[in-house]
Image (cartoon, rainbow, N blue to C red; front, top):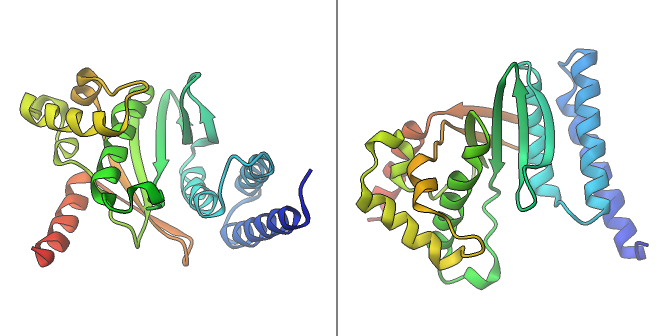
Length: 223
């Protein structure tokens, strides 16, 4: 049972998603609206079970709308096996697209190593989740910068052992149960980055190379 505070938070979560879905539905046909409503109800149930957070859920719905309008069937918080749950599982024809949403949140335990922690986190997501799909993408809000190792901007055939082992060593600092394997890093693929503008409820898809160029230009100003 929820406490009084818990009930208030639950109502706020539901109210926020209702407002968001109303915004997202303005230009949609009835079939897509129904599918978006199903996704909203799933997230509300998951919040009731304390399995999702509001910022993350909002971004999933914004991405979900974009994919629904492109003909994908969508599931949110989809179990891939006993250990892993992906944020967005999208199917169209025989193709599967998995998107992991990164809000930019860093746990307090990593206040002194946020960049390294997030680089390991992103690396582990790409290495683990991309093997479950034909296409793998990351999504992040416009105000966050993803810490993506450069090797994931290249096709697997262009990765050398030195760079692979560098990523492996980084991942081993933070992820040991189960560890990220060399083979996973060698074969992992990242096809797209979705930039989410939450205020405008819109997304833009770009390729990893373009994203890395943008990030490099920002980093060069800090050097």
